[in-house]
Length: 187
Image 1 (cartoon, rainbow, N blue to C red):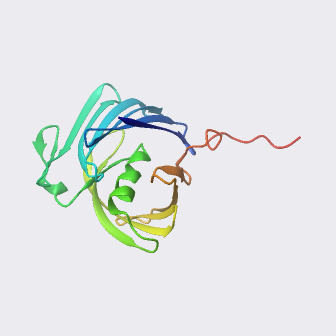
Image 2 (cartoon, rainbow, N blue to C red):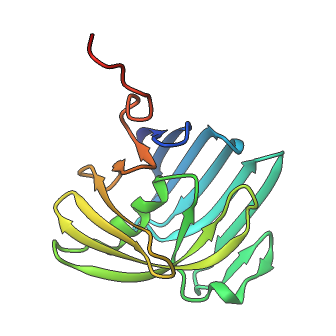
């Protein structure tokens, strides 16, 4: 078993997320805890070795729970209810976590200059509503990806490490704990 650990800090809104990723018997499992202005949360995500989403269990935000599942045949369910509107989605996108950007980065393995349009199952907070969300990823350099929301004008150039995990998501998240703190002017 191999474990990787990551911590992200909110840049414009104070937050922290600590994630542990393990690979065991051909399955990837992410366990994460965090806190932001909406409250505390914990989640578990199960992925295939090819970084295809299988299952999310989320606890938090006023003690609510959310379960999202993508079956091998591509069908989705949310809290055990079928969700036909998520047909075509492969990845999940948690509004409060930069970890879920790693899923398409790893799964797609784009060459530099490559672009892919995808649909995600987007989890909003604090509502925990799950909706289809069209997005695009363009690999602009070895460690840079242009993220585009295809139903709004939101874009960001995301910096990732050699494993595809976000280092810097401008204005939102950073692995640098000082990124979200105001800097003191030099005396």
